[in-house]
Image (cartoon, rainbow, N blue to C red; front, side):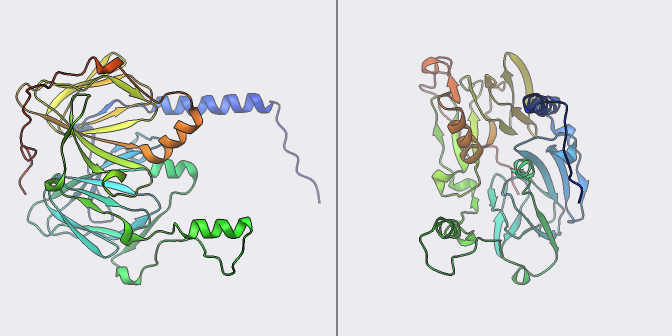
Length: 350
């Protein structure tokens, strides 16, 4: 049999330099700081819902870590059922409906948050008389980069007839060797849908004022009982005419404007945003968010992939500090005597 010989006129050093440069050039080509709501077109889908892309390959704005999309469930419609290897966060923007996750039905209304674990069979329904909308963020681009992005569509099949999540094999024989120990360790972490927290109702959030100048509420985070692949979501409220202190970090962040209007300064350049717009803060950019409304709060949901990819970056880049702020947060607003509005103020009816 003839031997196959792979040849190249370049050294490994030259090949790697070119490949790395191409990856960065491609990423820079698709950078977006603000995607306006008017840039997002809802399309009918085979799932009987409508879907529009803020960030994602299908919308012509690909990314490497996170995506963001708007979904609309028409009145009286139940979607098909599907599952995927990545997890996702839902935030309800308008209307009311429900999401069924592995047979568990979760009712939702505006400003409620739902978490969809990886490999969980799920579908959405709207029993009302008006359309309902929710935004999603997921780590599908990261999974696709790793070569493990898988999606399965089950149509209208009964969830009881569908296969469970894939899981690691448990050791069949006791043993102390390294392979058996690996089986034991990974099988102990097999997905257990009943162990996941799945939703945060807006009535249950706890507002906390931060040193940066915002009032913040955790929506999805390990500190309130969630187990995600790294996704975390928090709503930042900027009081009338107020702002958040300048900072930068090693990972990108997506901020969706729920209410209000304002602007974000990124490396000295100002970008305006309003309700329905998505702000994308790239890694390692100095940035600061401002509420330009002197009478009402602006609310921004910040999502990033903090507890997996970001933690890996912390280790890989140590001792580089991946979070930088102004000394003593000198540029944060003075909130002494400031009275925050009722957290329910501005929440849409349903």
